[in-house]
Amino acid sequence: MSLTREDVTYVANLARLEFTPDEVTALIDKMGAVLDYAETLSELDTSTVKATEHVLAVQNVFREDVPKPCLSNEQALANAPESEAGCFKVPRVME
Amino acid sequence: MEYEMVIGMEIHVELGTRTKIFCSCPTKFGQEENTHTCPVCLGMPGVLPVLNEKVVEYATRAGLALNCEIAHFSKMDRKNYFYPDLPKAYQTSQFDLPICTGGVVEIEVDGVKKDIGITRIHIEEDAGKLLHESADGTLVDVNRCGVPLVEIVTEPDLRSAEEARTFAEKVRNIMEYTGVSDCKMQEGSMRFDVNISMREKGVTVLGTRTEMKNLNSFRALIRAVQYESKRQIIELKKGHKIVQETRKWDDTKGVSASLRSKEEAQDYRYFPEPDLVPIVIEKEYIEKIKRELPELPEAKKQRYIDEYKLPEYDAGVLTATGVTARFFEEAVVLYDEPKQISNWIMVEIPPLLKEKEITMENIPIAPVQLAELLKLVKENVINGTSGKEVLKEMFNTGKNPGEIVKEKGLAQMSDTAELEAIIEKIVADNPKSVEDIGTGNEKAYGFLTGKVMKETKGKANPQVANKIIREVVAKHLG
Image 1 (cartoon, one colour):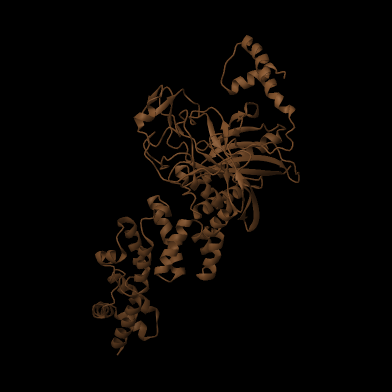
Image 2 (spheres, each protein chain N blue to C red):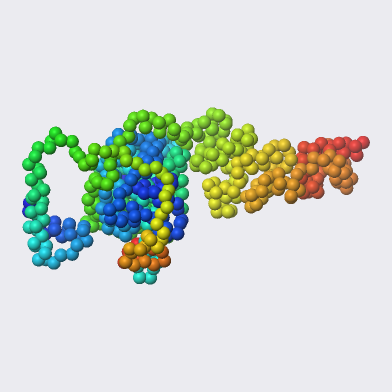
């Protein structure tokens, strides 16, 4: 499957990945190969097969609406690279 | 050239479950930041979400109340986007198989009834809250992350700001009535997104639309629609094309501004959520929820007219919110004078609420207290004017009406002896009035009654006072 530079940079942007022009050139072929491989599935006639909504033949797994103890504020923030005033701190987001 | 406005809405309603949609953290509002979280809603790797059964029940109820079809089979999907209010970098929502489809809500604006189509209702998780208080970054509170929402999506059937507001209010009332949400606007329990486009009158093709997100009050909704429709008309008249984009409404400044254009439009890359299994709803379950549905606003209004013989206006006001209707119904059980109760709820209570800057939800008096107060008026223990004073005092102190009447000495003087003494004196002091009455001037009675009321600070029972005045005057005229 042939991809364009725009296809690659578009997907890269969605994944918040930055590539040099050379890397983009290389990815055109690499991503194309991955998609080609997936494309082999299209050889099968699936016109009579029902769409798979889920791989498990299980449905209706529910929880009762009963509260359980939460993590403490300290525990919740334990993995945060940065925190302030009991909150996770992230780079400034424009409102 | 005349333009027509076309509006479609998306309404987000937070469900009133005790716990979040996929974990057992409480949904309580206004708690200390990041104290209602667990590995699931924090988006830790390797955790497994499990759907809250109440979410399915409430969504089914909401769907039935809005006349939707409930899907036999629905599933959850991942909606991918990077924003720090979502620790997982995706929102668990529903894409192609929502839990409800194809509903309808009837609205009435300026006496014209109209059906507004509901395209779908799906369930999803709310995002966290971003706080912009830090000097060099943005702070994230994850407490709200995972609070269950239903998103109600309409057809582009609305044609004015007034229709949009009426529709939104109706949906809020229905959600409140069915008990699926407390619908507290000030706590963000209900938020609106509006899609607006303009087209020449008579044209059937839709114009290019813009979207405004997260309007959190009816006022903001109306103003945003009015502003955006005017802006689009001005652009169109200049011969400009409307750019399809998301705009942000600034309620303080009263303007909308471009947030992102279609070119930068989000590509959410929805895919089925592998961690959650499909939801299958059987007919019996739907029937059971249907049977348990409470009386909805429309039906209640009609019943108030039929059963309590209330004017349509009263019935409309009393059933406008579930809280007011409940208050009325509890009071009417204790005091069987529906029109009296209605008058006090519609006329006397609102200014007191306004003064305290609260709504019926937080009314400081109980229905039983209002019933008691009205009984005191009915039984002539106090007169209507004192009644209003007592009500105000009840609002301020929370005390029972009987207690206030006693404390403030507001009980009407029906003690004949005491009244007689006062009246004797007044009649003796006003021989001119007695003379006037003697010559047939009945108006002088009014003057004397006024004097008595003044003397007794309004506590005299008017009927009793009148009777005594007539007796005493008759005696004087001999």
